[in-house]
Image (cartoon, rainbow, N blue to C red):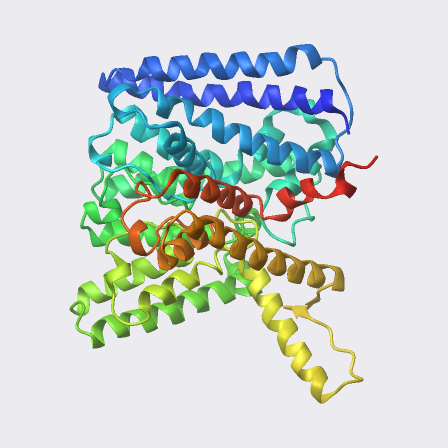
Length: 482
């Protein structure tokens, strides 16, 4: 492991990230909201720090290994969240405290969508835009973007790609070269964003809202330019567009690549993970809509609209809202919240544990039941027609064990700060699954939580975004041995 090489790459990536603060300056000048100076100062601080890391080590050249990729991914997301908070602390009357600014920055970059801000409608346009852009950059992963456009990472870029793309089955490349793979993913990502923006505009949004919501929709983030989220527009067309693009973004981007290259949609219905997600969303929607109708919570049309939208929004871990589902009758709030633990497909912008892991856990559970009946039988776990190696099956159980253990530890930690059990349970689950909405005292926003609880949730967001092991491996003695 080369410290100089890692500092060089981090410095380069940090200087590159500073350029993402230029568009908010342009937005500030366009709307004359006076916020451009805050972003200019943030750019200066970020570039200077990146230069200090890069310049002394600019001649360091060494091929990256997987271990280096883990360290760079974890360090960069941590550094990125901290420096991404700078503009939010420098915006004068609307400035946030350091804790709240870091929370908001990490929430955006990890596409969690939890917010500590109230009065979002009255924020300066530059700040509104910046929050949405943070989610868009975090959606596919800015590290993958760096691999795509920075040839200085060389062949070792695959080490970064493997630590960045979410999911257990991610070693296969769409194209022979990792740079081309990352570029292909970003072309698809950008194309979906443009299509989503145009659809929103056609449905009645102005260009600013359409751009901001297309960023957070395709990223499955959940940030909005209004306190009332998507419900602000009160439009069935906008809700339907949002629902459609959330489902598309919750599918693996490798499926989008195959569909684009072969000009066929057949792969979506042949892929076991995509099929499971579609059936899961359909079943959950039926249960939710029927419950809303039978309890007279809404009439026929509103029950269907709100039920469908909230199911897709929460289950895909977006967290957009057209209604406060925490007030819905019976077990519906709990049911919808638990659905977010499933999340999106592997290789999507969604959070959660990922559909493929849920499928594997269910299939392994069935295998153990069958073994009780046929102890000597050799039973393989299959996804579709492909047998899953035991190594991957064991890794899934390891992930689940680590997930439960960390969930419990952070739950106790948040409760120790004085937060009640329902609020603590839902905020930790929301942060770890990169969902956003919570129950209890945080159902409206996270602003009233103690500062220590917010820092614990920041760690939970980071663990969820990098899928736990990428961060946990850094705390093992074996990682640091030569």
